[in-house]
Image (cartoon, rainbow, N blue to C red):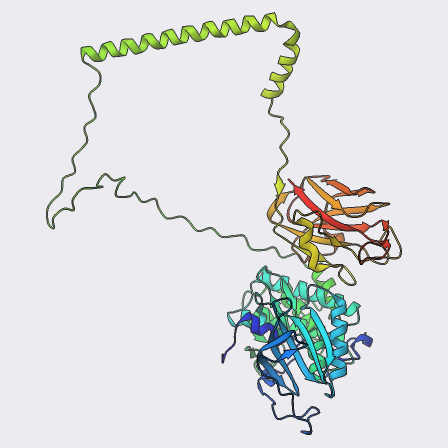
Length: 576
């Protein structure tokens, strides 16, 4: 219990590090946060059980304990952080029977209003690249925020404890984190506590951020230049991933700081073998008194500029898989011919008998047997020749069927049979958000569950059928498990009408590092019916396929969905 190093506990502990002030929605300029990330999370370890709500000691903290229930639903299990009048817990949602994390503070706390505003703003974003806020409530003089709990995720802090990241892993981390923060800033949200504790890698290799908007509000962190602050934090994360060192003089997050009095030096000067392009990228993102990488590129001051800089870099490919040489084949005791023999006495010399082959058929009986077998073979050949001739004569009498027979024989002998369609198994999927908010990220698995009654549905739009310019499109990235050739996609649609337009693209992961314009198009199709078959225009081999919808029909209200331009996918099948 003293170390609590499991990924699940880490998720809750660092979800405290996700925050935004009440003014974050209005922040658009770039700059540096007032509370720099150079501090360590040892602040959280200094439990403040005697501190008052406003730091004055007037109001004692909430008396909470394991087993306490909030809203008769969330049962508290373990306190993972207690600081500045608030506490964070691992809890159980007894209604949905799942683990969750909960931040709790008194309603009279000086930051209660900003925490509620930050949590609700973060929940509206709905981007799956962030740990989701599930609930934000003020009830019985208590304010609490409920968020996802990710038991299969590992903090970047724990990953760096084992050593620097591989080049491809560092590249994926900075690409995905930068893209996610650029999307958040477009919606007016900032992080301001983006550190190694707030970055998680899931078991599928995807990177997620926790603490958007909430952690800064819990700690009262504000910034006049939130975009610059988050960009510098991403630069520090990349620096740490490449060098296993924190890019400041102080030690933090289990990492040693840089030597004093030498300033900020590029990662490739701290550690040999660091990728030159990523080293320059880290320096462009960090605030370093105007000093940038060796090529004197302009600094990156916003996550959007960082995404653009990553896109201009040569793409870093994943490492080739390594195969170990199998051991030499060893004959078993049975194959060596010693099975069932008694073990030799110590010191006794064992002579292996040499097997003698059986004598050939040289006797009178043997010769007669050979002549008999030869005669039988000759008779069989004669009978077979007679049957073959009879079959050829019969074919000559059936003149009407000659052309058909020749055509069939020729087609059978030619090797130009069309390759039979092979169904491809979908291993997983994730909604792709190019801009704005997600559609229904929790329902993507319903598109390939072989149940036409379940579906993933887009939001309702007031204009259409084209989604642009309000949204470039909506879609889902599917994982086929390994690289496969795609020939056709059969798509079941819930709504009919004018019109549904679908494009298929080959991409590099469930969270693509490039926009749709940078992907390889597989095929496209348009329909007004309830099904659509999209055929590949050329042979493309890929593991990840983006189904991208750019136009939806105008449909009436159904269930809880009002009338408007929308579409839903009921079934999807890929064939190769």
